Image (cartoon, rainbow, N blue to C red; front, side):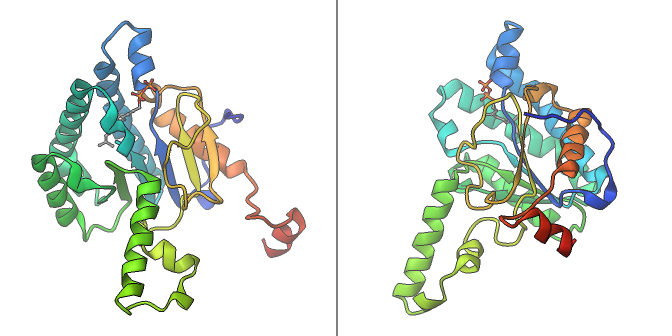
Length: 251
Ligand code: FPP
C-alpha cells in the first residue's frame, strides 16, 4: 500500500518509465448506483489527467493497460462500450497528444481490435512516430503471457530458418522480441483500487520494478495521486538484488 503522503516530486529522481494498471472503474460506478460504463467514462478523464501530469513532470515513458486479452471475456455490451470509448479517445485526443509532442506506441494483439479502431490506431502511430516528447505506450488486447509466447515462437522460427544461433539466446535477445523492445523496463508500476495482483501485465519487464498500490479507484486517480505515487517512488531504495552497502558504494 502507499505509505507516503507528499506530492513533492524531485526532478533528479524521477522514474523514467511508469506503467499503470487502471482498475476500479466498475466499483466506482457501483458505489454510485451507476452503470459500469459510467465508471469507464469518468476513468477516461483520469487517463487524460495522468498523461498530462506525467508529461509535465518530465516522465519519458508512460504505459497504460487499457484492455487486456482477458477483457474480451466481459459481457459483449461492456466490450462494445469500452471499444467505443477507446475509439473516442483516439479521435478526440489525437491532436492534443500530437501537439504535446507525445509519441504514441501500441502493444498487444491490436489486429484483434475492430477494423475502424485498428486503422485509427495505425494512423496515430504513424503520425506521432517522429515526436520527441513523452512516449505513451498503450496496451490494447494485451497479455504478458501472450507476449512471451509470441516472442518464443518468433525466436524458434528464426532458429528453424537458420537465422539465429540458439547459443546466442540470452536475456537481451528475449527482451528484443517483446513489444517493449525499444523502451526501458518500468521503474514504477502503479495499480489503483487496492488489488494486490499483476493481472498479466508486463511480466518479464517488471522483474525489478517498484510497485505502488493505492486504494484510490481509477476514476479518482488524477494529478495529485500521480504526483503522490512518483514522490513515494523517489523514497524507495532500489537494490536490484544487491546489498545496501554495494548500492551506497556505487551511488
Ligand atoms: C478496470 O476497471 C478498467 C478497465 C478494464 C478499462 C480501463 C480502460 C480505460 C479507463 C480506458 C483507457 C483508455 C485509454 C485510451 C488509455 P474494472 O472494470 O475492472 O473495475 P472493477 O474492478 O471495479 O470492476
